[in-house]
Length: 598
Image 1 (cartoon, rainbow, N blue to C red):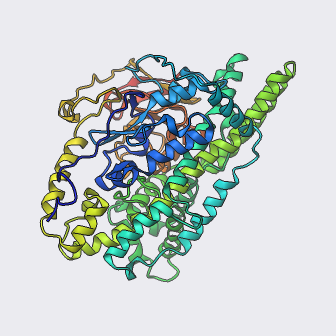
Image 2 (image 1 turned 120 degrees about the horizontal axis):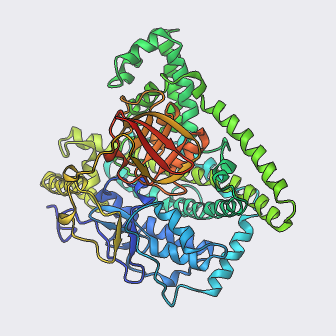
Image 3 (image 1 turned 45 degrees about the horizontal axis):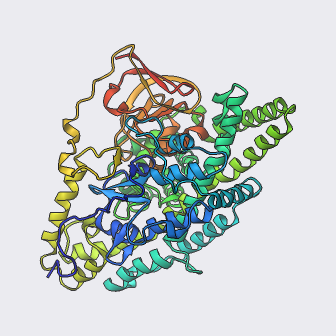
């Protein structure tokens, strides 16, 4: 019977708060896990009966690899870097602040900007006797020296090639038994491909590269500020053309142009995105048709980018491979964009601007050889590590997607047998419980329903952005539909963090779900709660982007930078305060949004 393998059947995903590192934030991690984590994800990534798990361990590995800490500084039994409260994932900002104390040329304020963006209620830093550590500072300095001289990230490219081979030789899950699939999923997550590279190792690489990517960006910001041109910082890191999370936009753009040039395809898309993949498939049966050519190109797109999707780190959530209509909905919006929205054309202009600005800045620093060398080294490191950060993230997501495909084969079998009612039901189980359900489904539907009810309650509530010490009990969190925000009127402004420079005007379109972008028209300003790569195609036709949360290395800033879109992040309450359809002006230089007309 259910419950024999665990003390209780309730939805119990939570971690113990850290006494040594008591500051937690939803900043940054909210883009990775916008929703509460599912039971199965908590089981493999955060903590289970065997102790702390892969995501937490990866954070420790990354910080130790950089030299900021040693493993013995962390609690061996409880999560330190990642906390889960009320089902929501939190990142430990106190540990990040210690990195700011120990790292040369970095301070707590710099770390806070990267962690929090511009958010209210952030407590000031309070020092601890163990924060400063000269040995750690020396280790970090050595890491930084390597950072500024590394011409490439060969380990990242090696992982990418192995993942491509893994996708090409995907296991035949249909031929596996139920227990065999369940075991394969855990084996894959823990050991992955040749050499024992599993999720922990891939995620640690992503975190290490992400931490280091902030360093050259910070140096460029310091140099630009020193010469009175702080607004040029992001222009100096734009138009790289090798940003993995922006790459699907190029492919989608070409697919969108196919649709725009074909009356047959246009008619199919005009009937709406729901069921579009089925209609395209039926039309593609006619040899030589535009639908056939499109379907062939779209099939290649799904193969190349199918691991992307909303909440793509969560195994139970659909991706462009498991639900192609999600990708087609984005292409549907992109087909309406004018030709000058071509992301490759935009990027070419940004590349020229970056190269000219870089040359001018270097010449301006000629009288100060030390500052000039620092600037040029930072430029080179940024060109390696900023695109590298997105590449490592893509590697992780592609790796996770293989488990998603496997779990859906198993899930469909369980649905066919009546053991569960929907594909996401297995995500409410720990992996050990999944084996129990396979053997005997009796009673598990009640357990799943109970946990789903708790999960749904968490989804309905607004989690705190910052937690200090103990988290307030979830029943005290306000329900989202009961939160009243004062709507902005004509002439009102809302402040945030400048994400990408430039000024644009357009109609505000509040889009809360990247899978349903039908209201977004070319030239509109995309106003979103947060963004992950599934939102990227929606940027292409927009005139600007505004996001409720975000910080210096947020996805929305990275993609806006590659497309040259004015962007403001950390615009607290933007999706609730900016009236849908209002004419607004987005100033990416100052981080302000002005309502011009309601």
